[in-house]
Image (cartoon, one colour):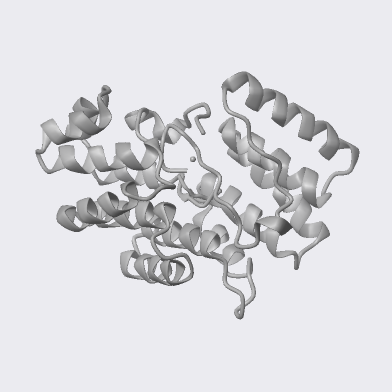
Length: 258
């Protein structure tokens, strides 16, 4: 998941990495990651640049295309991604709502709309939209990972883990899903499970700084400060040592799969 400006909800643990659930889903760090769709060849998403200036330019460029044809699928999805990267979540949700009105049965539009709703904290509506974001016979693990994060944020941890388990059946060992699952365990103070799951995620070739820093957070919560410092080497440890379920939810509120 590449580095973009930190979100408001990430401010308490600003150095910690979703999803991107995702999430495109619900990114979990100071660095947002965009997850690939189940069928990358069909994805209308343009490559998200790194760096504040580049992200602003990306957003402005797609915003002009969107203004020329509000609700058009490709422009809407990419403009909303840029808005989300800039923490303009309500605007992103409004952009995707317009696209969903125009193409109410398009799975990619619904998936992007659901992720934007989750980012903006509209969890009940996000849950409803995400249930319609893929066909029953062709589930999308990136959406399922975000669905899990939404359930975790709503306090339904058992339901969340069912989504993560289903996503992992489609994408075994996927770091983004394992990351969200590890944070789910952390929310319920099952720290040994959280550590084991995040270590598995961190061992993946697809793991990034977000996963590593979330593992460092859990290690810090367990009192394993030396291991956490070795992994992170930054200033998250003081904040992490004071972490509580609400701050963990802030991290999960920008899940992998975004």
